[in-house]
Length: 217
Ligand SMILES: Nc1ncnc2c1ncn2[C@@H]1O[C@H](COP(=O)(O)OP(=O)(O)OP(=O)(O)O)[C@@H](O)[C@H]1O
Ligand SMILES: [Mg+2]
Image 1 (cartoon, rainbow, N blue to C red):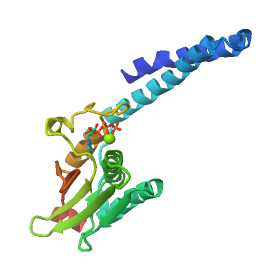
Image 2 (tube, rainbow, N blue to C red; image 1 turned 90 degrees about the vertical axis):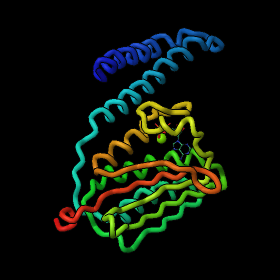
Image 3 (cartoon, rainbow, N blue to C red; image 1 turned 180 degrees about the horizontal axis):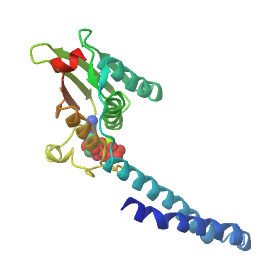
Image 4 (cartoon, helix red, strand yellow; image 1 turned 90 degrees about the horizontal axis):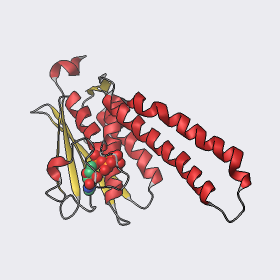
């Protein structure tokens, strides 16, 4: 279906661009209607294309390919991307040094952390603080990490819908961020839940099983 939507978009865009090339010069300086409208068509078609791409990427998310990795390293990598781009926000990482190496899909877990950070960044204001901590539960053989922020928080009525694809309260959100996170975590046989952060904001808690046989590979 993504193809069926995308196919007509290119000719629409090319036609608008052709009109611009051919006729833009024929309008007098103060007549901006042609310029504005054709420009808008080209830009909006671009946005549609991006949207369709995101939807189709979600629909065929690659199967996870777990390999032995250090979760703390994967988290640090994702965090570094955000730290550099958002100097106004305080990022804190509190890794558990006893975290074992276990099988996980590095790219996908990184994607999950990025999606959570992306939401946290848009939820906090200037005095924002975003914290990730990891811990290893030896008894349960579970790796746990949480991403918490001191941002706007999530109203109780929104909570049940957070992980649904296309649920978004943002002007230009796809609502796929958390749906992707939740797919990735369940592909790893893990769990994700949300709770209110104290005194303010939101915390997402992710638990990943570190099974014995996986540890030995
Ligand atoms: N840390 C958070 N603080 C406050 N609200 C949040 C947080 N994380 C998620 N949400 C709420 O959950 C909704 C769904 O999040 P999700 O990441 O799935 O989509 P999105 O962020 O709206 O869109 P996209 O991820 O495509 O930018 C958000 O629109 C927002 O209302
Ligand atoms: Mg998001």
